[in-house]
Image 1 (spheres, one colour):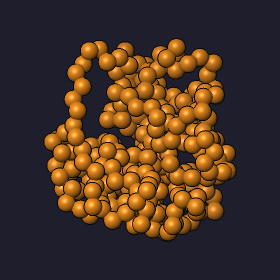
Image 2 (spheres, one colour):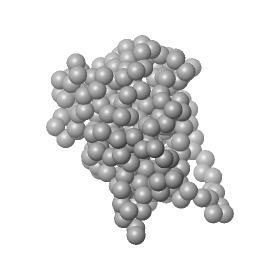
Image 3 (cartoon, helix red, strand yellow):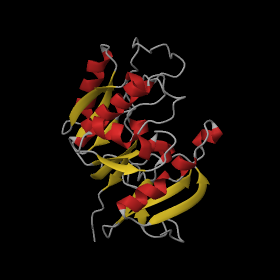
Image 4 (cartoon, one colour):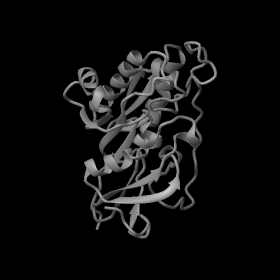
Length: 254
């Protein structure tokens, strides 16, 4: 059910990614023009899903005709939600979840047009947030704003309150094999995902992998740092953060 007021007016906030998750949502690769080897890309997606599933529940949106193949790679520990998706970037096409102090969760569904119509069709991705929020059984705030969920980054506090900002330099994976996709291959370790008890980060097969692993371990001493090779995802211009979207646990603080 869509709400007539804004999330803020209704007393909701968007939690930070590092707060406790109820689940992670992903979308199974399907757009052939993005991937030069769909089988390898799907194996990389499955590897990321399994790494996350070790720490929290995960649901994968899958086109009905791809369900059997997805199930064979994902196994029984990953939940599948059938939906006619067009692409596989859950961070941009998925909803943004919000919570309130009463321990209630809701979701925000933006309009999505595949980055200004870069790809068509995109109607299945545009309807994905509503399918996710229905499956999550939470109230929905619908916005007419054309936006990417990945464009919203928060610390969960709603106000900076004069806190200092610490800048940490994270190098790129210089020297990694870009598989011939130099113009769009994602070499960023920042494109990692914070889940319950872990950081899921890319592995590129270069010395920098170990250096960044140490940086993350220093920054997050209470989390496991898990590296996953993602060459068949990085060729699409994104990484692990781009293909995931967190659903937070709503905690009653009243």
